[in-house]
Image 1 (cartoon, rainbow, N blue to C red):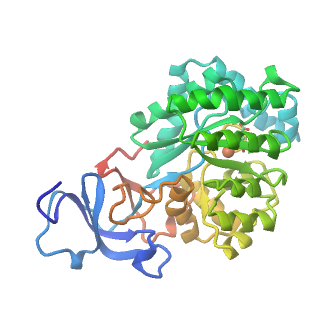
Image 2 (image 1 turned 60 degrees about the vertical axis):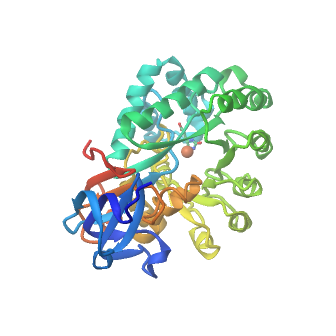
Length: 415
Ligand code: DI6
Ligand code: FE
């Protein structure tokens, strides 16, 4: 405890704040002109207008932001970035007319990446994945969720999640892991999906939980993957272990995934292009966040939009993420996702920024730790060379990030 009130470890001055906190008025960014943020022990201790700083403050470090915009550190709440290899050849096949489902049914798709990932050493996996995570973090991202799902056996799933945990220190970022054993049926279980689900529930999940490798459990509920009933078995086991759940729901077909997620009080239901209005109502009642993934929508050239109007009408929080994966969204730019969400899904730039800050935090169950500039939260911050926050969604292919702070510590920004 610091005995001196208003004696802080660091202060950011001369900044325009986009707090993304409703406490600061009706502005959708929670904006504060000529603001100041103070940090003590890695947490935000004071936020407000510089003119209203208490009379006797002191700070060990003073950051002059030069009038730039300060936002919460961005949060990429849905990625599959730990994998080996590339699927550029499948991209070429799709350009020749093959569909994603056809490639998957022919043993390519997710299973192609599973073969490459199983064959990679832990060090190779770490090096290939660190490049992607480094690129994501260079755009002011301070928290990333990483899923397993390219191992599909206990040893490789554990290796992927262990690599994900190791990446936190290597890239100076907070990592939340999700176990996605129910991602695809591995070849050795062809025709025996229920046996594989039993392996996921009875062997993989307990082992991963015992090793502390998963913060949540995810599944791919889809015609080409697992049924609602199989997903429910995975969720039941997750629940019995006290693990939070989330779901890839209704991306390619409506199997009632969003509804199922809501029934299990999931943190989030992700994709949602084919979700029914009744499922959205259930999400609203359950407090389940909608994670929209416009990178996958774009890359698969989907035409059916997620039900944005229903999500808005039901006040379901909308988060956005890269879905960084080799098959449907080989994307390491969360800022590009902001632009795609606005151009393709017609989100406002303010909705888009909320989608990668406060709502993304909620999708990870971290709303009391990250995603807003507010007292008590971690001092995860990003500084931007922009004139107004809408520029983050407006320019695509640009990176105006000029500062990145994890729990108050400056970290390198340029990749
Ligand atoms: N949904 C997706 O879009 C990705 N996984 C998933 O569950 C696709 C992953 C891949 O094609 O490698
Ligand atoms: Fe995904």
